[in-house]
Length: 315
Image 1 (cartoon, rainbow, N blue to C red):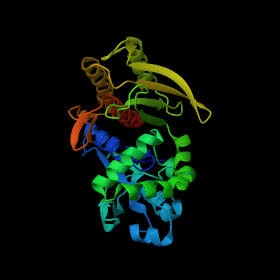
Image 2: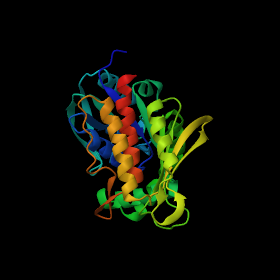
Image 3: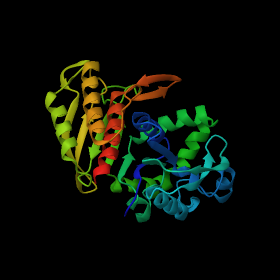
Image 4: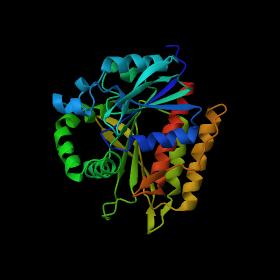
């Protein structure tokens, strides 16, 4: 395929962190280079109609799958689309947007890997897979603060969506090139600081990045509050029957070490992307309880994704 646009897909259940991850990657590479869209814009029904039809937004039958396939293909080949626009705050549709793709397009949402046609349009496929208890906590906080729901309404919606999550969302994990799992420390009740596992599939091999993460793991960076315990580990795991290289990073890694790692990966990105200048100012920044905090595991996840996007230029 003689395409002009590098396509990144980010899929995960509701409130898994897709938008936060996407914003970080856009910030790293620059909005002039990366255009983000949300596949949730392709819902068939607004919030009221979904209640009337007794269908959830996670169900493919509630979405224009055929239009998604067409639009993803158009974007991949560098052609403009007229994209629908779903407003999560109002639960209704706004006027469509004219979208002309930049060098890189990120599609984040619920069903991006649902069909083969969708999947074949992505150069890099990412699945966000936090523990269900953590995702539910995020969803309650987000939907109450930004979408006007009560806690009881959010909990009811989580229960109503469970069957569709199991049937349609989680199975997409097996198609991912990269799986990202943010998780709390087993010895702590706090979720203000999260560790992360970044699972890299052999379907997207890259010798240079393998050397980078191998070097990272060899340095055995110590955790700030856990003497003698390395904060970055490299292991192998088997997911859906295939091996993954796993970068496991503890949130307590020291500031000096994080700066070395960020600059190392940023330099590798810039060496591959002509004219790309990586912006590290706000990497890993997220909002919690109305305040901005910085998470290095999140920063490393964003940098990893950005690296593989740029690496796709060479494929």
